[in-house]
Length: 193
Image (cartoon, rainbow, N blue to C red):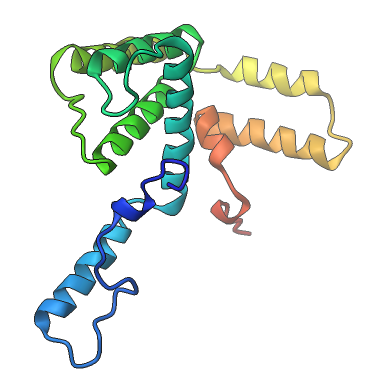
């Protein structure tokens, strides 16, 4: 948020701690509650991610389209950016994350960036449809292939080897995607004996 230079505009000057001042009336309490809800709208990590992604967009505009304004962002400029990101090999998720960051930054600065209508909307729908079709055409790993991979790794010798075997076996038996496996944490696993 600080990188965007808009931190002071993201939130109103309502009470910051979410608690009404002692002896305050119902309106003050409602304002404090509203402030708390506004702060909960986006997690701090999300705001940091938006700031980084928006900075990347800004650098891209300066390098590739220096005559265009970064904010307010013209939908056609965002469309060109999306095309360039896809040509660079970014995944659908990464592209949509960058689009969300540009939209958020524009709205935070008081500009409405409409991505739900016109050619930009059709472009985003096309992005989702084409990448979903690619994903649907993939085949699941068969048991023989999973067993072959585990045999190629050989018997586990180190703790790392055991971890790799366990992740492959868990991923295959649970039909997890690699993104689900990457997000897996120790606290997510409950072992019952």
